[in-house]
Length: 131
Image (cartoon, rainbow, N blue to C red; front, side, top):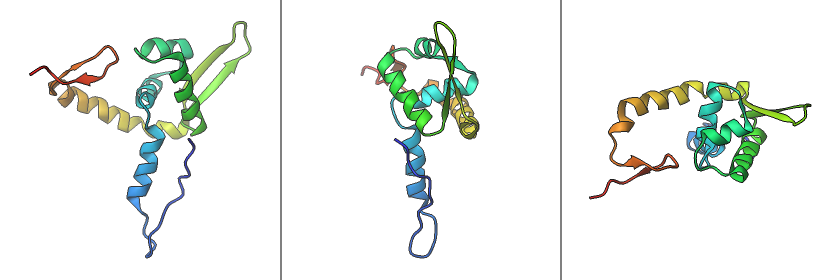
């Protein structure tokens, strides 16, 4: 889904930041997009490496999420003319601006996330602790 980042204004010409933030969140919404972006912020990945690095993601879902990120200009895909073909994914210069945000999430998790109730499932999702 490609969303226009054109600023919305109200009657007095002010930018509606709520609408703008909803658009920003929509670019990264999806079960796996933030995890994909976090990995690609660290280095370039081949498709198979990404699939192995994200437990629980299917080939179909990884392909779909990468295509959406590419269509939104956040990920670039490079196909090398080799046999078999080699495909690499990396974040774009535009997406590199998200680096500090992804790093801030990592810092927050290291400081607070581990103390949250629950445990991680095999898919990396938190579940409530048994009462």
